[in-house]
Amino acid sequence: MVRNPGPAQLQALTRDRGRQHCRAMTDFMDMALAEAEAAGARGEVPIGCVVVEGASGRVLSRQGNRTEELKDPTAHAEMLAIREAAAAQSSPRLDACDLYVSLEPCAMCAQAISFARVRRLYYGAEDPKMGGVAHGARVFAQSTCHHRPEVYPGLGERRAVRLLKEFFASRR
Image (tube, rainbow, N blue to C red):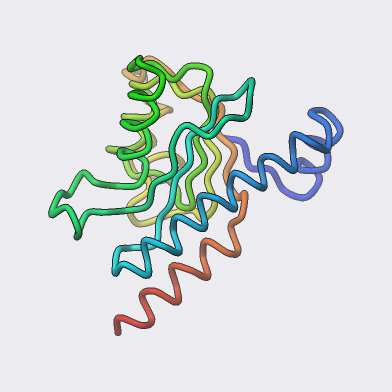
């Protein structure tokens, strides 16, 4: 289920979940965006991801893209963060965890999010070209998808879009 929290919805989230929770959401997305910035500085596409234990707010993993560095097409920020969080939890299931990522996950990452049973997915910028959540494959909308996290797009969107635009403009 994809939710698009505009200003009114974010205000409702603030009321419903409390100001502290919304601040934590923003803080976690800021961490993901910091990982994206670090990835960009390494010459990687600036995408960052953070996996958080929902109840405690403990950060289990923070990763940025490393596809060029590792010469691995699957070394997306989400994949690396899910692997690290699963190892930290000693479990392939992250059903009590939330994932924050600066860009809408591609189909591969969306499927990994489903397989890991991530509780909530928060992402910044939409990706009409390669996204797999609200665009493209729409993994969570498929009848073959066994787990659908709650999805909250648009958190930190402006900063995420700016990072991507600046990165690609510098490459042209």
